[in-house]
Amino acid sequence: AKGMTDAQHGELVSIIGLAGQTNHLVTAMQIPLDPQFEVK
View 1 (cartoon, rainbow, N blue to C red):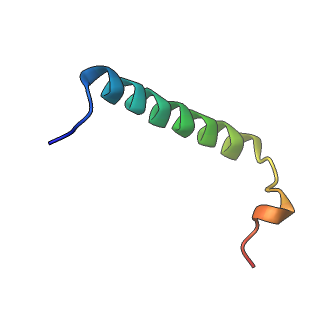
View 2 (cartoon, helix red, strand yellow):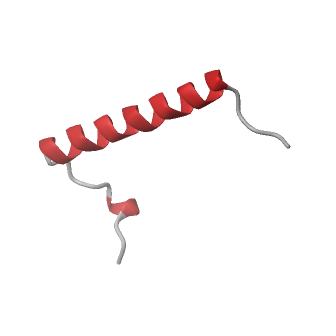
């Protein structure tokens, strides 16, 4: 069975954490969504 190494898992967790921080910043700054990404 294939899985991920500890290094790969650590990198994945850090990427997910960075994405969360980015989302928090964008939400706090109330940056408007680009029109092409709006759900109609």
